[in-house]
Image (cartoon, rainbow over the protein chains, first blue to last red):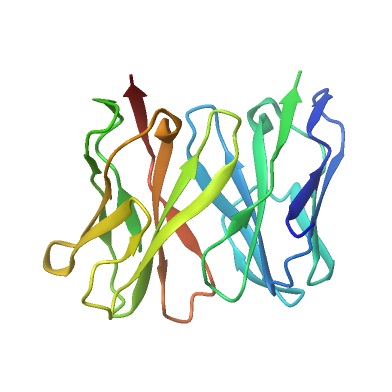
Amino acid sequence: ETAVFQTPNYHVTQVGNEVSFNCKQTLGHDTMYWYKQDSKKLLKIMFSYNNKQLIVNETVPRRFSPQSSDKAHLNLRIKSVEPEDSAVYLCASSYLGDEQYFGPGTRLTVL
Amino acid sequence: AQKVTQTQTSISVMEKTTVTMDCVYETQDSSYFLFWYKQTASGEIVFLIRQDSYKKENATVGHYSLNFQKPKSSIGLIITATQIEDSAVYFCAMREGGTGGYKVVFGSGTRLLVSP
């Protein structure tokens, strides 16, 4: 099956903890993205990688750090989560800057 | 800086009718790419249709078509013969063609409700 996969589906944690989200695409794309979607459904790009190279790095808190081992994988680590980090984190991929294919998302709840 | 604006927060229509969703964008680039995506109630986001700025013809895919008005920086999505399953949130998005990487900016979305 060719798609974008994300784990976990849900994660509940407490303020100050560290969390990691994983994303894998089997579409053969060379570009991957992380988005944050808040409770109002606003989609904001956080990071973008092309062939393991960071090409888009929006203004996000320094506790967020992306990690790419190869062009098919892009993970997101959040050190010391805050309540405002509660959101759905969506991973996507594309060939260059073409239309994007999204994963199912990871819903993070910070207590 | 690029910006995408969707002013319609929600639209309600009857099944089998035609609906148009508005989207205006701002960019300094002469080359750019416009996309529409659909997010279903389950949260799944799928790509629907795309318009490249250098193409004069409006894109059409199935029962989705675009109304591209370049002088007005407008890219409307038209859905003909709407179906219940078209109920979703629709996002307009833009990517500039310059050297800013592949950054895509999304609008705030329009919620479409199709009733029988």
